Image (cartoon, rainbow, N blue to C red; front, side):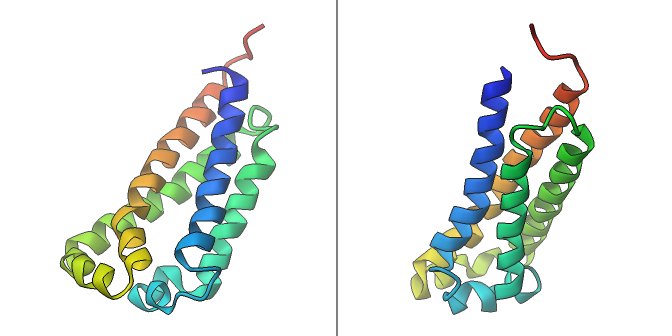
Amino acid sequence: MNDARIRLGFVAAAAFNIGGILVFTRALTNQAIFATDPAMFSRPACLLVMVWGLAYAAQARSWRAAPAISAVFALEKFIYAAWWCVWLAHRGGELAALAERDLPAGVFYAVYGAGDAAFGLFFAWAAWRARRPAAA
């Protein structure tokens, strides 16, 4: 994967966080998202998810210069993915009822961790790749 595509991955991660939160929370008004897992997705926590997205976008052009930042992003994404797995193990049976009450909330809780895991792998790979010299 060339540097331009890796930069695009950082931008995609930013869009995933910012756009995903804005769409699924209906611009931070969807009480079903906040009430379902308030420890992880209260309104303030959702704002911070968007701040992480801004950090990904800010790192897009300079990812090679600071591989440790990408490693931190990977860790953050893996924490969200692990939280999601635990949440699904304990409360996954509630997804159908949640989706029936509020489809965006049901879809959000069904998929967010898979996206976080994928971007966690991407950030881990970018951190590893940044340690190698850029192709000429």
